[in-house]
Image 1 (cartoon, helix red, strand yellow):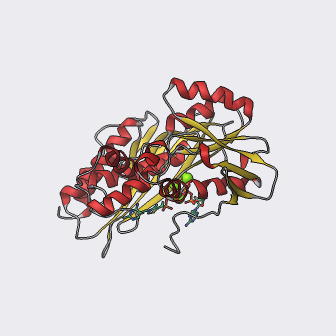
Image 2 (tube, protein in one colour; image 1 turned 30 degrees about the horizontal axis):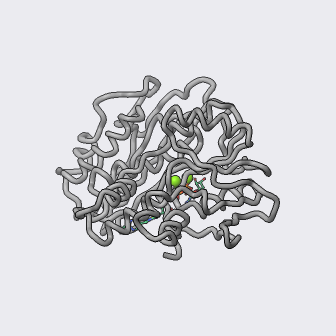
Image 3 (spheres, helix red, strand yellow; image 1 turned 45 degrees about the vertical axis):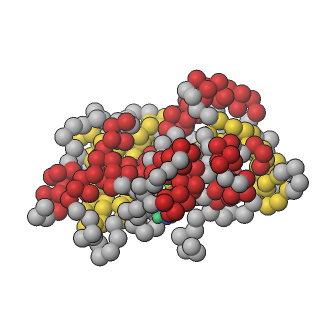
Amino acid sequence: MKDEFEFIDKITPKIKRQANLIVGIGDDAAIYSPTVLKNQVVCVDTMVEGIHFRKNTLTSYQIGRKALAINISDLAAMGATPKFFLVSIAISDKWNEQELEQIYAGMNDLADKYDMDLIGGDTVSSNESLVISVTAIGEVYSDTQLLRSHAQHGDVVFLTGEVGHSAAGLHVLNEKGINGPFTKDEQVWVLAHQEPEPQIKAGQILANLGERFALNDISDGLASEANELAEASQVSILLDESQIPLDSLKIAVDKTQALKWALFGGEDFQLIGSCSEQVFKKVQPLFQNENIHVTRIGTVQDGPVGVELTSDSKREKLEKRGYNHFFK
Ligand SMILES: Nc1ncnc2c1ncn2[C@@H]1O[C@H](COP(=O)(O)OP(=O)(O)OP(=O)(O)O)[C@@H](O)[C@H]1O
Ligand SMILES: Cc1ncc(C[n+]2csc(CCOP(=O)(O)O)c2C)c(N)n1
Ligand SMILES: [Mg+2]
Ligand SMILES: [Mg+2]
Ligand SMILES: [Mg+2]
């Protein structure tokens, strides 16, 4: 490619998935008309080579896919329907044209699944690492607010899917490299790390119920995200260790390791939330109909703001510890 303009031409979508997109890639900024009676939901997350991925943990396709997936996950945690995204990419000379195309192919496949349009971005050079930052835009009905601050005393704390798989996958990738060979279990974990599925359907089911929910997606680990709910809501959360779904991890590795990955590993992109007991009874069959696994993992209790973890033998404070960009 001779310059960034040729690159931008190459990645410009040939189709439009959202009817209310007015101006996409090609001008100084994009224009879309928001849907009447809906609020706009917007978020941005960044992935940096060496921090969030290396060439031997994710393929180029998976880097693109994951950069969009982690943002769709934040939309899911707000109960939003995905609509648009923008991509800022800083490219070093270690990345060739074909790899860059693959990054966009990964994003495009997920965008297709969620009917999202790529409506803009920025392309710059970088000295060492590839950096990719995605801004995602979604919509919710104006009365929908699935907020971290909505947990209340007496609530059920619930979790979608299983946690810890992504950290287990990263561990395996670090040991064996991207080409394995992997056991059946390892393949599942590696895929959870490389190609996380944002829980859009789950978020929308909760949003459509029109009830009060606290909700957060799990990017930094169960411990960290549960603490974020507790802090935002100024409540005390009690998590029951025996209820945390670790089934497939526990069989393959020792329980302490499985629990550590689940609590502190991160990048699972499942949802943790809370709601009243009555509302949880409505949630369960709706999730079941869509094959969404949901587990009650704790309660909102009396006590100081924070999270506690109980098991048969102990009850201890669960610190807000997960991936920390300042102290690695
Ligand atoms: N550098 C920043 N400038 C302005 N706001 C920020 C910045 N970093 C984070 N925020 C805001 O802080 C809040 C929490 O951000 P955070 O990145 O922790 O959430 P998250 O995206 O759910 O987590 P993760 O980044 O682990 O996926 C969000 O409202 C986010 O927009
Ligand atoms: C090569 C490599 N090394 C380590 C990790 C683990 N990791 C990096 S960032 C993060 C938390 C989420 O980030 P953020 O807080 O920015 O959303 C985690 C668990 C990885 N994915 N790849
Ligand atoms: Mg973030
Ligand atoms: Mg989040
Ligand atoms: Mg995020």
